[in-house]
Length: 391
Image (cartoon, rainbow, N blue to C red; front, side, top):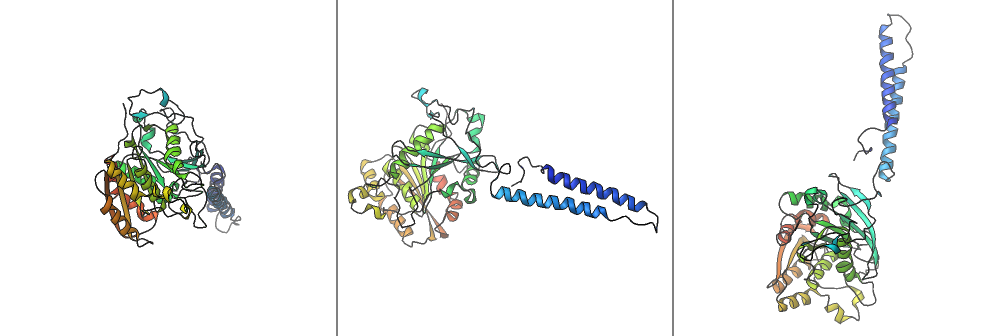
């Protein structure tokens, strides 16, 4: 990344370097004009060059430090971000005035206060805001990213599909999918241009209400007596997205993805709310709820069990859902692959459509899962989803 936003060296570096170079050039000419035996003048040219280079080096070090610690003007982190400004984007409420037959939902508002978390090489932003869920009562951070096409005037009146990306592990206070080191955002863009993926808006909420440092987690569910994380993920986060982005009204534009416990939460959300969500990519997921917080709440635990939910969906004969699993052969939990295979064999029928990518040598981590999403899972769900759509 350039230390200077405009790609030019700051004046201090440039001036020091140029002065040293010019002074050295003049001194060199004077010395060459002396006759043999004439007294030599001190080598001030060398000193000027050293001074100029020193200013340059120190300036570079200072800029690097300021960039590392994200001190303006060497970073745009923390600056305001407006998605689709002028194109019916965030904050330009219009959803309530749309015709009922419209396929798209314009942002309903109110607009969130987005701050830039990082800028990608293509100029797109991962932004973050804090959301208080009206239905769950939970307050947490949500990161968002929209592909470059979202800002394209050609799509100014188009609704985009949404992929709610859930992390594994604590999932608090950060959602690790918001970090560009895993390459999820750049991969979505790449896969779209390769014809493999829809141009998804990525929505990346916190998964849990607090760290799981004591082995406590919430299974992305409304566990009695606990924060309503199921409502947060399946109602508040979608409502927030609809308030700020041009989305698709039908469930054909809504999906989940996640790894580990985030994979479980996404899988369960789609099976529990098939009228709202159509597909999920579940990587190295748990198959059944296993939080210790379920103790004494067997009825509610069963209501959040993907096996129970899948059977109910089959018995009701729909609606159709699409579950793309991927599991590594070197998962830390050796039961993960056989558990997923058993689930597919038992419940992968009727309206429950499944696919499985077995990753040879794959481990239980996001760096394994992201590149392999492009080898089948992203195509599997993209084929049945819509977007961008317009009336």
